[in-house]
Amino acid sequence: METIIIIVFIVGYLAITLEHNLKIDKLIPALAMMAILWAIIALAHMDVFEVNTVLKELEPTHIDEILLHHLGKTAEILVFLLGAMTIVEIIDYFDGFATIKGYIKTKSKRKLLWLFAILAFILSAIIDNLTATIVLVTILQKVIKVRETRLWFAGLIIIAANAGGAWSPIGDVTTTMLWIGNKVTALVLIEHVLIPSIVCMIIPVFVASRYSAFQGTIESEPEELTEPKSKFGSTMLYLGLGMIVFVPFFKTITHLPPYVGMMLSLAVVAAFAEIYSSSKFNITNLDGEGDDHAGHHSPVHASLSKIELPSILFFLGILLAVAALESLGMLFEFAGSLESTLPMLGTESQGELVSDFVVLILGVGSAVIDNVPLVAASMGMFSVPIDDPVWHFIAYSAGTGGSMLIIGSAAGVVAMGMEKIDFFWYFKKIAWLAFLGFMGGAVAFVVMRNFVLNV
Image (tube, rainbow, N blue to C red):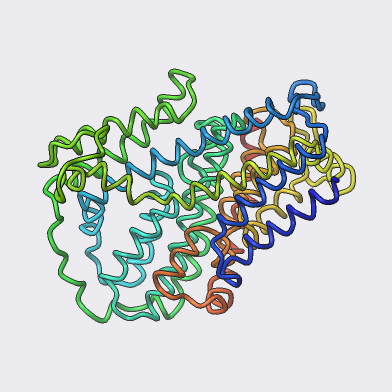
């Protein structure tokens, strides 16, 4: 039966990877794969296990208990993401991101490149790399009219956004998973991954700034930027970003799961949104009488209706599918075989040898295969303690490795759609820059780990 389990997982994985070729949304194979895997386990009465991270061994358990355990862990991530997405949509409802356009004053292409890269790096660490890319590409379309030039800028924005998301516990889904899964803590993650991420961003931008595409000035005057739809746009931007940043501090102080802090942040932002709105709508009252009921005018209701539920369902499917393999003990056994067969390029950490080679492969693999299941699998494979350097290296590799192909990250896919970027154009022009940054940051991480942070 284990062979059938593996075949189902591989087929589902391929369907997710070939989403654009098959013209089937990846949430469909993810949900189907999850349901089929657990159905096979139940019908075949297969033994399921829970990994004892202290004894580093598998302990038998019941399918109902282990499924509820994994559902709870997955729900923590999904509720956290729902809160963050809603806050971002509330900011957008008030046109808060228009405030960022005020920073775009130079006409020098090289200065614009650095400005967009730095904005992408900072924004992605707060509102996640996907949203940061959408915001900045939208602004880019208003500032630069020549499409060929915009493509180059968009390519570097993707690299910078992925690099910025890697060092923040709220900047990328994969780092959020590691943080919520108690694999890393916020401060130690930043300490280990911030500088490698900066290196990963700076190298490609510095090299690209020498290209002819970034010489001279933009050919036309920047588009006259309209006033924000709301006079509270700037206030909601700073409030929303501030409340998202507040979440790691809330977790550190209370030791409660991050989604609790995110719900508190959402409540605060939603309260101000309702106060600033002319609507008298209550968040708990979704029904109204008449065609023009109040709900349609609520910033909270409007924001909740715009969040990406397909992404949430995809995460539900893929995380529980990987959990099925973990519950069967496959990932734990696979990790053991990797450590015994692959060359150990890492250092001794918490009494164990961890292969940097494996983590680098994971990073390169995230350019081809979605990094969410890769990180989910690694969380079930490695039994090293919280804040072990291997978790920080995984956060870096999975977060930045996806930049090497345009389909390798959510930021790349959304930029591809917004600017109609050709896959092979990106592969020829941008991929090698992303690889340079990825390897440069990896070297920086290893040097810091071995010679700086261990001192």
